[in-house]
Image (tube, rainbow, N blue to C red; front, side, top):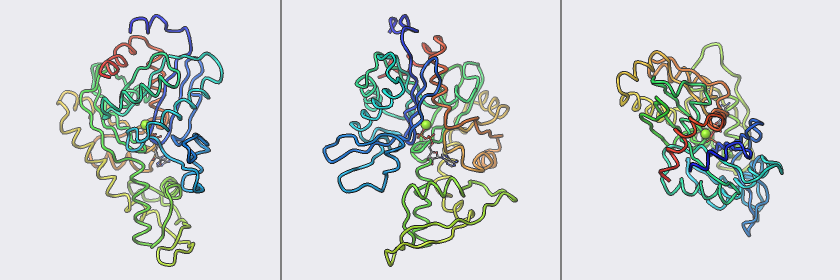
Amino acid sequence: MAGFFRRLGLSRDIGIDLGTANTLVYVSGKGIVLEEPSVVAIDQDRNPVAVGEEAKKMLGRTPGHVTALRPLRDGVIADFYSCEIMLAEFIKRALDGTIGNPRMVIGVPSGITGVERRAVVDAAKNAGSREVGLIDEPVAAALGAGLPVSEATGNMIIDIGGGTTEVAILSLDGTVISESVRVAGDELTEAIIAYLKKVHNLIIGERTAEDIKIRLGSAYPSPGDEFPPLEVRGLHLMSGLPRTVTIKAEEVRESMDEPLSVIVDAIKRTLEKTPPELAADIIDRGIMLAGGGALLRGLDRLVSHETGIVTHVAEDPLRCVVKGTGEVLKNQKLFERIVNETTRNV
Ligand code: ADP
Ligand code: MG
């Protein structure tokens, strides 16, 4: 490991947020160079057809011989082969023919097992990385959100991604308590699909449902901020024919009640387990929300209402984790304390 640091600066370092919904890549000296959906399209011989944005457009729209899939589901690697293809392709695009063989820091969900950690490290090594360090996503998210993670003070970060919600209390560069639940943005989207099917007899796809969530969704009612109803196209359950129905913002909010309460309960459970000194810090400093799920309107108000603690949404929540990996690559002390700690357990 020592040589790992001596070589610092010899080639470009790479920070990766390997998310279930989106993968982002930071390159030292350049900044964030890539932001793509974590989707791969493969043909029947398992050859890659498209990776990233192009592959996402194919989700649910592929002909028989092509499959568009998400290599990560629920915060774990669901398909190792396509994950490796995706990582290799993104690293190639990020480096854009410059110096290869980079050092890498990859953000992974804190709840993943040793075997899954090993799988991420192997995929990155096979993709051409010389040395791979892992960092827990909540730590990276907190750094990227600008929280004073190194200080002797309690910081609470909640990273709501596609597949997992990570709740963590951090202090002195370490995780004091954390909890990961496999309910996040994807489940909110699925709840909308289920609602439309049950109440309006309308079958819609994942992309349409996500679009409804982003355009009309909210976690908490806010008077004066209501959106006009939205026309949704899908297939009628009985006739099987295309049909348009109108859905109200209020309905979308109600449809997401259950997954939202799972997220809120995880936050409450973590607070209950927090040592009193750190809890006092969190009451002073508030709760920080990161990840794409933090963009759901009114989520900060819901969390604040349910916990009684002031809640903030990080600036640029989708980029917190990758920014955090960049911070770690810039600061060797931080790197040694945070990244090594995680990787040693691999
Ligand atoms: P991951 O880290 O798992 O890749 P991200 O942090 O990239 O996840 O967040 C992706 C999730 O955020 C998706 O479920 C997506 O639908 C959701 N999302 C993105 N933008 C919004 C928005 N404006 N409102 C609500 N949800 C959003
Ligand atoms: Mg994430």
